[in-house]
Length: 360
Image (cartoon, rainbow, N blue to C red; front, side, top):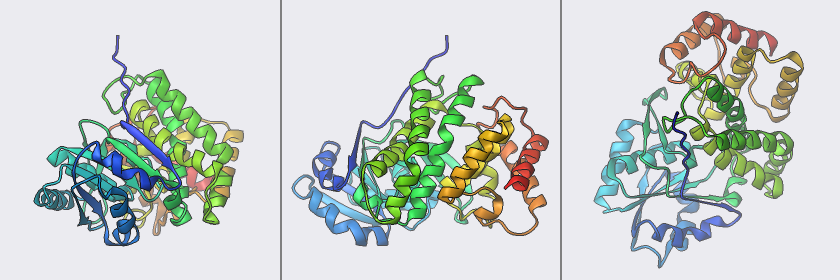
C-alpha cells in the first residue's frame, strides 16, 4: 500500500489589516528577526512591520534583498541573518524574496514567517524554494524540511499592488486541479514523495471553482484598488488552496513547461503564473479536451488577460525554433513531465505547442 502524505503551513492568517497581527505570531517562533525584503518593499512597509512587532521581538533587522533568488543571493542573505543573530526569518515581498527567505531558513534553520505583498503565485505556503541563475533561468528547486511556520496575508496590501500580479496568481492557481488530477491518475508523487491524498484533489477542485466563479469580479475589484468578499475568496484560492493543492496533489505538464519557457530570453521575464497559465492550455490540448471546453477556458483567459500564445508572454523571433527548444528542454529537464496520461515525447509536445499557437 502506497503512503499518502499531506502537509502545509502551521498557521495561515488572511484579511485586511492582517499585518497588524504579525507581532505575537512572530514571537511564537523567535525573538531576533531578520527580514528578507528589497529596498522598495522595505520602504513601503518597513514602518508598519516595525510597529506591528514592537514589544514582541528583541530585534528586527532588514536585509537588502537584491531582487533575484540565486544561490549567491541566498548565501549573502544567510550571512547577513547570521550577523544579526537571527532566530526567525521573515520573507516580505513577492515570490523571489519569499523563496530567498526559504533558502536562508534551509541554510540556518530557525523559524520562518512569510508575508506576501502580492498574490502572483502560491509560493508563500510551500516548502519549495525556486532558485534561478543571475540571468533569470530556472536553476534548481530546494526543499525546506517543513512548510513555513506562519503565512500572514494582508489583503489591503495585496489590492494595492499592480493588477498584473493578481491575474498571474489566478493563472498559477488555475492549473492545480488539472495537474493534481493527472498526477493522481498516473500514480505520480506529490512534493512529499508520497501518493496524493484525496483531500488534495478536493482542495485543487475547490480552488478552480472559486476562480472560475469569482475571478472576474475579484480582478475588477483589484483594478479599482478595492477588497471585498470576491477578492478574499480568490486570494485564499490563489495562495492557500493553490499551494496546498500543488504540494499535496502534485504537478504535471503545465508546470513542467516552465523549464523550457524560462530558457527563452524573450519569455524569461514573464511572471511564473503567466508561464504556467500558458502551460495549462498546452496540457489541456495534450489531454484531448473537447472543443467546447477549450472555447470556454480560452474565453475566460481573454476576459482576464491571461496568455494564450507565446507572443502574449513576450516571445519574439522564429516561433518554430522556439517550440523545438521548449519541447526539448522540457522533456529533458522537467522532473514531473511523466505525470500525465498522454504519450509524452519531444514530437508530441511540440505538436501540442504548435496547436496552441495556431488556435490562439
